[in-house]
Length: 203
Image 1 (tube, rainbow, N blue to C red):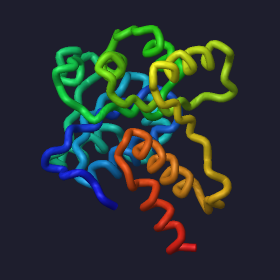
Image 2: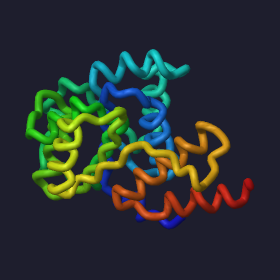
Image 3: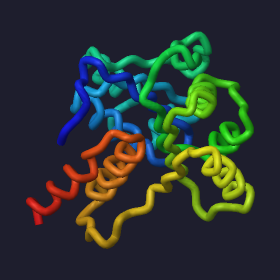
Image 4: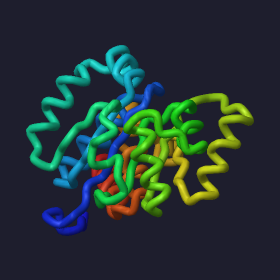
């Protein structure tokens, strides 16, 4: 996969909200760091609780492991003085995965009560890519209206829908596909291409 010169690449912001699907956030950060793409992460307090319920590795253990990469940094959600709270800090954009409908609603209405919401607001006002991975079903009219509002602003709404046509063999296949699709949607090309190439080799 061809990636930009990582020595000069701006970071990707990854926000983790309190929706189910913590594995999506973990795998997204793992993939970016393994490609030496800088990551600045933040998560809500609800995300910490969900992570504890869904994951074998604690969030603190994951953060400690990620901090071994010089390209990684983490800010608590209450740190509104963090660099990503300002548009003067250049980034490639932001992925919120998984994204709760409460977070979708806050972003859609310009609410910035925590760092995750503020970082997303910065992406919108600065015209940067913002990809939301909303994890909720069924969706109410309120949820759909909020997502439509954001889509009209250029935000990518990427529900974690499995690609059944690829005949995934297990949950890992589904997660890997969704992560590749999410990162590609941010404007970093080749991740989906790599995923499909790997699938063809292992068939």
